[in-house]
Length: 327
Ligand SMILES: *[C@@H]1O[C@H](CO)[C@@H](O)[C@H](O)[C@H]1NC(C)=O
Ligand SMILES: *[C@@H]1O[C@H](CO)[C@@H](O)[C@H](O)[C@H]1NC(C)=O
Ligand SMILES: *[C@@H]1O[C@H](CO)[C@@H](O)[C@H](O)[C@H]1NC(C)=O
Ligand SMILES: *[C@@H]1O[C@H](CO)[C@@H](O)[C@H](O)[C@H]1NC(C)=O
Ligand SMILES: *[C@@H]1O[C@H](CO)[C@@H](O)[C@H](O)[C@H]1NC(C)=O
Ligand SMILES: *[C@@H]1O[C@H](CO)[C@@H](O)[C@H](O)[C@H]1NC(C)=O
Ligand SMILES: *[C@@H]1O[C@H](CO)[C@@H](O)[C@H](O)[C@H]1NC(C)=O
Image (cartoon, rainbow, N blue to C red):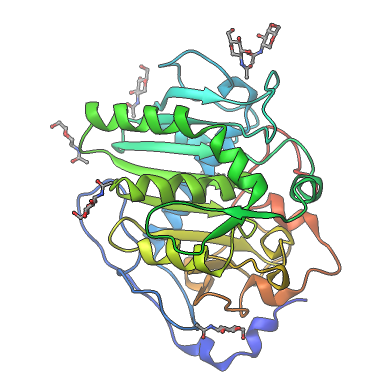
């Protein structure tokens, strides 16, 4: 590639969109913007980068075998030093699903957890144990209707649809009862890879039930058609923000391709200017691509040659507990 983006003069607009809100445990890193046409800016606030790091740690924890099917109220812990930020917060699990004994079709692993230190309810989804290419291809990029109220003519990938259907009741009931007990906690939905696609569906549905949820995804494939991407994009800012992170030339966010009618939510936060193994990025260099179909970030790097390494590095080795996610 690599830095095709540097060709774009519009990058010179320094987009330091910071809104410090003081005492809240996690800070919104940018002003609430309406969905816009293709606009590309450089730089985010340090507090938003800190949030990305925190939720990358939660997502990393969802890969760890110790957080598989343990009893409610047990601490979320990680091997491989995968989630120091989570461990420091004494995060407890409300429900865990998936893993070694799982018999569901889509094999989605993750948890709903309580972070008492930062007053958060976090829903986290790991990528699939299968290779990503096979997982997406098993469902042949087939789209099925998505029937959430307000999402007109929406279609989503059949795999994400069944993956979420298999976790929906466990996640929704855990979140609803947690919010009853902790009405002032902030709800966050996060995930990596295939799990990022499931996180998008989980967040969109929680929002449709009038819960405010920020969605943080890392290396998400495209989940649905343009109508779906537009719908999720337009849930922000009223019902929570969309924070979709991509890394360099990660191939996964480039699938399924746009020519079979898939699009991404906006905005995209692109880690660029390093290599496929870079973990440390400065907030001032992160590129923000707004607009459905904006190709100035990850989408512009090209799928070929396929470089699966970039997919495992999201501010750290996000799948450290499992080993590299195979493309
Ligand atoms: C953004 O750019 C893409 C690729 O050039 C284009 O297909 C799309 O229509 C643009 N979207 C908007 C909202 O301008
Ligand atoms: C986490 O729990 C340990 C052991 O109970 C305690 O020492 C520590 O202060 C707790 N940390 C936080 C941030 O509450
Ligand atoms: C999986 O099933 C085996 C056999 O029933 C059991 O010993 C093991 O604890 C289960 N693993 C998990 C994570 O529940
Ligand atoms: C979780 O534990 C229960 C009870 O031990 C067991 O029946 C179930 O198969 C386990 N599920 C997974 C995904 O390991
Ligand atoms: C939520 O309420 C508890 C108890 O009133 C308080 O200690 C905590 O600081 C509150 N958290 C937030 C994020 O407002
Ligand atoms: C969500 O809130 C809106 C505006 O207050 C209301 O019109 C809608 O019926 C609510 N939806 C649900 C599912 O409660
Ligand atoms: C988790 O947080 C630690 C400490 O900030 C960081 O070094 C690590 O890279 C993070 N992990 C991920 C996957 O971002």
